[in-house]
Amino acid sequence: MNLMQQLKQGGRPVILDGATGMNLQKAGMPAGVCPEQWTLEHPDVLQTLQRAFVQAGSNAVYAPTFGANRIKLRQYGLDGRTAEMNRALVALSRDAVGDDVAVGGDMASLGLFIEPFGDASFADIVEIYREQAQALADAGVDFFVAETLMQLFEARAALLAVRSVSDKPFFASVTLEQNGRMLGGSEPLAALAVMQGMGADAFGINCSNGPVEIARILSELAPYAEIPLLAKPNAGLPETTPDGCAHYHMTPAEFASFAPQFAAAGVSLLGGCCGTEPAHIAALAAAAQTPACQTPAHMILTASEKTAYCFSEIPALSEPINAADSLADAIADCEADEGELVCIRLSNETDVDDLLENVFQLANPICLMASDEALLETALRNYQGRACFVYNGTHPEAAAALSKRYGAVCCCKGE
Image (cartoon, rainbow, N blue to C red; front, top):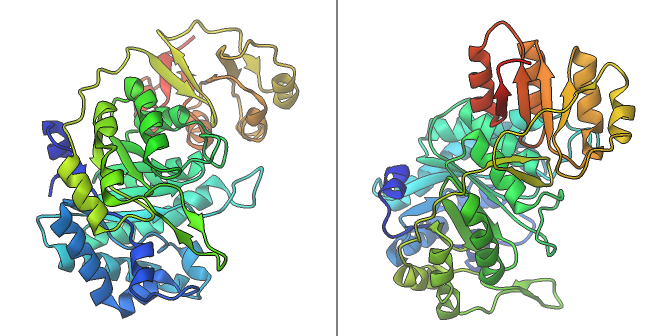
């Protein structure tokens, strides 16, 4: 099924499925087991659930590959079976729903932190996702979705990984804390700016605080969205019982009552997360309305890892900080006004290392300047935001390639 064609044609939203893990638990999956292995050992439970979602109105389902990456599977001694398990899990979903329903390869947050705050490198994260993405591509998924993402670098890594193995649609779906930001501190608009800049095919929010809050936040993002928006909220906020179990009490009718708010926000992909059963999806599908046609604001969105910055046009470039003159000290002493574009010249690999170690201190959008294409690419690849850049090298076509690959804003072809 061609989801992107359906989205481009407009009309009613794509109806996604509801919760998988919670419904498998209700059907007998015990706590503490590897969900992916249990699913493979009890295929009829998953397939019954996914057929029920399709009967309820879902025209796209997520294969149960949420935790089928080597980091999560290693907890059960199954990391050596990563590719095999992903292929088998996708096959179960395909057999359950047939060829007329889209099957997505589901990828999850890894729970790792990258340098300088963790032990993993960004390259490590990309490779972990690439291994899973390759298996999902080999299994023939119709689209990829990285969901419940807690850190912006995970979204970037997953997208780079998928694009290295497939040109199928990629959807990024983040989860937010009570303060309305991702666990790593990124605001939703920063995540949207980075993802749509890098070429994601849809951006959205899942899990989090239920439909009320997600509808509100997506309505705030809508004026800036150049790609379809996705919503997969919980069935309200959970109530935790003394035995530690979470229970969701929002009825299907209550859950579906938020369909008009999602339509007004222009949401084109709509489903449910924790606490949603086939009945919730059936009610949602019946209540779903044609998304409002959004006209994105004519502005340039850049972002640090945490904050988005809007410019009506490419801003004037200030005198660059020379990374060779102790970039750490220069950033710490930077007196640029909040939101002002800070230019940084990169001359060698040490400059890039210093940038990545210290840029978190700078609460401003940045413009990177370099004449070495490989040097600039390393910086843009590992900068966890959406940067501007100036390329002064001898291959002007490289600027367009870098802009497309990493979503960076090319300010000019040279100084």
